[in-house]
Length: 481
Image (cartoon, rainbow, N blue to C red):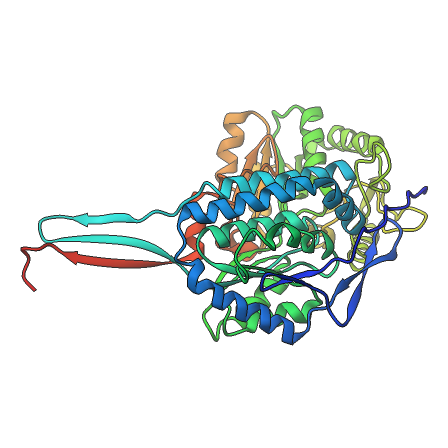
């Protein structure tokens, strides 16, 4: 496979701690998944520097919590202005470290501005619960303190923006750590926040998984907002039990797509393929399992295979590439392993099914049939460009099987809208789409059920998850004590 050399980094990428851009005594490798080689170094935050970041955030909270909605919004909008100017540079680095095609990287950076703009307009207002002859009762939402943010490697700067925006607009301060696989594009946001917010309000640090554990366990962290695997989410929940930290956990999924008998097969296949393969399948809410009527399987699989044949996989800097590499060797190996296991279990391969030749962690869009529950590719979250197609003869049985996992993040139903909406109501997931999949917007809450998460992100109500409820009861002047 031909590869396009990435553009060089323009300067050393630094962390943001207490209003200063700082390096580190040691660094760690960042690998470009398109070539499978180290292309940059990222600062390894020491325990001492992390403690400084948390201490500065704790100190800054004393004043930041008292700021008005207008002051917070003004700071965020100034940062947005700087991010806008840096969009091309951010997108280039994002493609280098994550692997996604450059147009998709530009779209993600544009998404940062879209979501931050939404957060800049959200205000959690006081509510008068009671106002009668004897008393007035006011419900206030007060900030928690220092938020610890930990983000994944599939959409690194966008996930960082979600957590940053929600934290600072509710009067909290934040110490945020990106994945060690993709730290650079997030750390580059430091330039936008370093002089637009008071020192200590926003802190960005980088390091290995041990650094995340330090953030999780630190006594001065009031809340953890984490996006990543269910296994790590469980570990965070256990680690924070001693201090009863508040939690927002957006975890893994095994999203089902159910195709109904009345569906337009070609249109449904096109939509399901897109929902499964976005970002090379590295999306928490990607379609991981497709349930189709047995009588429609051959036609549906044929259409999926045709979509896979048309897909262009390659280096994200190459023209017209739709799907880049898998982000890291560990995940690449897992995808290879799951497909090989499925083939040994009797799966039929209609497209893909083997790693692509050449350097980099490339795996083609893969369509499998003749699989069912009990095979790992069906039971586990593959987080890669592989879609198992499962047949059914009874719709109620298909719904039960779709719900028969410990996950509950997303799902979709494809077919006549009225019937599809009825089926969607029976899917045990936090978000279910009809004739679409994975559509998100900042004004709609997002999160999972069961082992796919705790709490919600986005939507006006989600900001309350970054606050504590405080009740103030005020007696009227004539009332007796």
